[in-house]
Image (tube, rainbow over all chains, first blue to last red; front, side, top):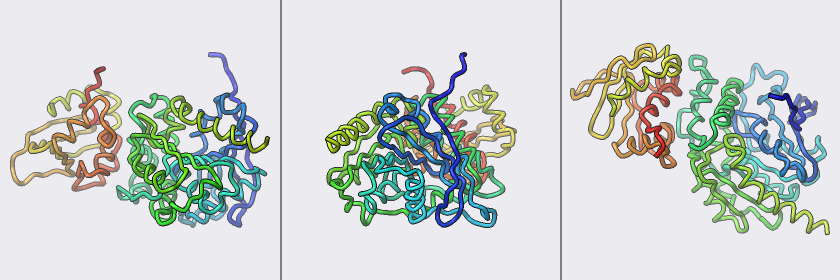
Length: 288
Length: 121
């Protein structure tokens, strides 16, 4: 096998997030319209490796993914050792806006999956003017916990094994083996309690059922892509948003699960590329 | 069919290795039929049809025959493709000492999925 480098570049940025200094790991590839990608709970930006390595995307889009603090190669802030990590809607929103400002991104497209899909709905509600378009993957207005979340973080059960095994069924049955297990590996690598802390947002604090219908797609277009086999954010959850938000466009992705960009990047791109083409055409129209 | 579990699991070295710290007896209910499955160091040591009213086991997995039949399809329908998916949609009840089940979740998922028809349909 001939060695090769990917076009993806990773760097560490030092910046203030939520009033504290942070060391944040950021990857990017491509040029053009900024496309900010948000990973799922308990994972990291590697989930977007397929998107960043596809020239059909990177010839027109600058794809950027940061590992949230506590995730991947981003450190938790100093003092973390005595804190319980719990993601809130307010902190998640602020972190994204502050990271965007630090990166000087002008009206990016934001694409988030799962918790990233949920916060995308928050952004559509509260900050539509800051985005060119919003793409929610596995986005629902709320998710009820369906198991005892304390199992994700207790010293007598291996957290990495637990997180990997818990999410394994959220991957669709047709996912290529290498990508299926890469997706699980990233879950197995998460820090203790981080997945659980993200799920505080997903199952409690981030509930937008009472206001999701107020999303105004004339201010910012909303595209929703959801995998057929996802039982965390089900196709019905996503279609409920599409039915209540005028102008929102939803597509159910056959055979896919909760991590489309990571579990089966090739099939996912078949669904994503038409959305990106629409966004690019809109950008050209508004520039003309 | 449940009797095949021993050969399927014990013939899979990686699965037995993954379960090397599992020593337990769990109850598997398929519709009206119940089985006591004893695991010793990851190997299925015995499978017994169970008929008595007092049954010692660490945890029980209870689902209808229809739910298990769909779960054991080569490509099950959405919601029937995973043990946790089955519980989410209330097709499967997991009762008893949940910690044994949860601590070895991948092992138990793989043990039950080993009965899946892997042949091309």
